[in-house]
Length: 241
Image (cartoon, rainbow, N blue to C red):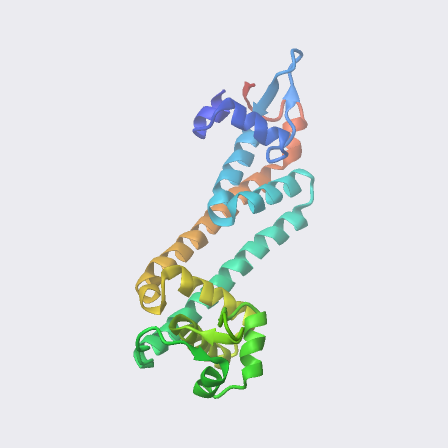
């Protein structure tokens, strides 16, 4: 099948995309084979380009909405992808600022001594109730003393609390701060994370560029119109399968 070969796919993959609504419905030959056209090629090109910026699930939603004629719904999903990218950029900006402040001013914790909630709250100038609220929001994850069942904060927990405090003073919401701290923990701490921020920003740039390419391919497809493939004689035949 020419359509599959042009995109480096198997014929079955293309049939699956048509079955799943990612491609518009194809006409059938008298013996039951699908007839794929230039419109299907535009649809497939749009879908594959969208994946790099929006992921498989959102790209499938976009294409299915277009093929149903629900263009506004498709564009809403595109908008949500751009909003998510902007949120990720803001998160990265916050991480860069907070990690720079934290690694530049924070004294290194000595040993592996843990502290109770009262000590940490005093250190940050907060009330213990505030730290408990942050815990409920997923910002902090203190352990419990096996004997007393009181909260205790290990050095990494203290680091997280200091970073959360910086971000909170910057006006960030608790759910946003929780996402930042997941990045810190995943990197193994503030210092290793600082070294990886350039790679993180590069990934966001690549995602943004991929969204632009996906938008261009989607615009090409919208200009043609999914209904074209159902009108006999108006769309060049690319093969059956």
